[in-house]
Amino acid sequence: MQIRRRRFLIGVAATLPAGSAFSAQWPIRPVTVVVPFAPGGPTDFIARLLSIPYSKSLGQSIVVSNRPGASGNIGAQTVADGDPDGYTLLHTTIASQALNPILYPESRLRAQRDFAPVGTTASLPNVLVVPKTMDVKSVADLVALAKTKPGGLNYATFGPGTSPDILSTLFQKLAGFNASPVPYKGSALALTDVIAGRVDFLFDNITTCAPQIKGGTVKGLAISSTTRSAALPEIPTMKEAGYSGFDLNFGFSLMAPIATPQPILERLQAAFEQAAADPEYTKGLIARGAEPLVVRRADLVQYLGDAGQRWATIAKEIGVKAS
Image (tube, rainbow, N blue to C red):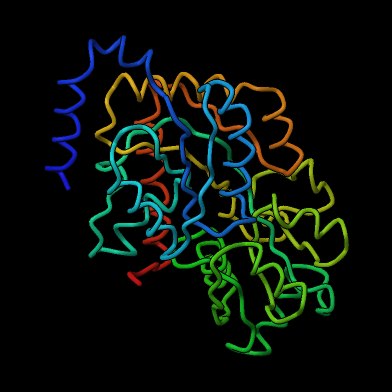
């Protein structure tokens, strides 16, 4: 793969003029953004919302392609293995990039080695939700119920290292009970089963569960942030519910293969900065309970490295293991 990438770059150098001219000619066709999770979840929603202003700033269409599986590992590996020509990008969670070495030690994928950051897109908390038919009104009620049924409750997860998995594991550790994981490829499918009462609880992303909470199809018990959300002001924080350590907003980033030529990467970054500043994009995030995550271009590598280390530390503390 490294040989193919070097040949690609040699070909570019041989057929194109100086970097400034190369940058001016690019892009000449649509750009694909790979989302390594199922449609309907926050990683997908944010990418599709961003694609509108990003297509304008790049001057080309943006195609969002969902390639779920292995906690985001399959889609990410596809991008890492692809041609580093700037036409295929990855939109994923910062946590999943950081946890890949822990969850898949046999995998070739290593985010800091294989990807260059284009920009950070958004951050959002998760909300602990239960079926509307469940006879609980608070986190304390849910814990009490769980302790009367050791191992009897179940919870939805999108795979090891994803936000529902991390938060559900942390919740059980702090509250002192055990529940059984039920795997899903994404938020939409998991939330459907919570609504139907087939799953007992889920730490769902606020962007997907807020409409269901407001519509009364599920109950929201607590939110995993330091303060209450303007989107769901009536929902207490996990700290208010008696559980500290849940101030965990999940961030998302847009990445390019590491061997992407610098002029193309800079074009992607400049167009991204313009798109991320679009008022409609910001308004769309806030309407769904998310917030813009603005990091200066010069600070991207350091920020993602520090954030990733934090997630790796949390994962080790709660005993997240290889799949």
